[in-house]
Image (cartoon, rainbow, N blue to C red; front, top):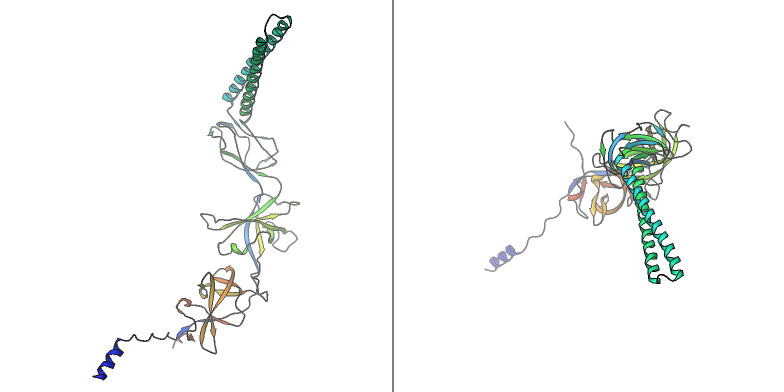
Length: 360
């Protein structure tokens, strides 16, 4: 009877959790890298300031003397709109100014005559005040008409599109006969002056490009990087968002202003990417499959050869280069880490080194 009770109690107790199995893992020995080195990208030369010029009024485009590739000077005519309606409005505004001028002169003459009569005692002071008020109203009407005439003259002048700076026409967006709205781009003008080398950087490398980094630019029509023909530049701008089509980030390298290269030229940009700030100044590389998330950071499994287990260790990732992660802190050269299957391991789990089967 007692034996049955003991067996029944043992059957109702919770079984002990099974121990973690001994897993075979792929290990990777960490070696100190030589840094990221330099990266080369194909770029094209563009003006630092490129304006899309358009009319400040709408209308039918009559002429467009500007052509692609044409060099223009500040104030040169680029395009002309049909301005008959604007000229008529300006003439009407001028006529209103003349009418208001006549009314103002008449009110001033009346005031002069009534002041002489007031001096002789024929009229009262109230009549003088009325004439003064009429003169002020006529003066205000004249100023209003003059302001409206200025606006109409400006509108008529806006039918002529002029270059606002010296530069080169790099594109046209409207043809004669087309009706354009106010502000619609008609001519694209690249201003003379500073030049930029513009290129695209893939998403996995944009974090390594820093504003202010030194760059070496060489034109394809000249010798390669390192020659006397190469230009020095500095990264001026890194796009904050990716291009919706190519999913790459645009980077602009500012070139020296003393000898600007021709617009549209193709060039090679050589960037010296930074080395992660490790203690020895060398880059430690790991495949991205060796990383796993630990809280808000990243971690890896380090193999303890004496105990035959893995230990979790937090690391600081400096960036990505293809399928490799660049480790800034947390690891040392010579250590072994698990390179695959990191999500099925636990702290202190016993592991063995994976050995690939040999084909017979």
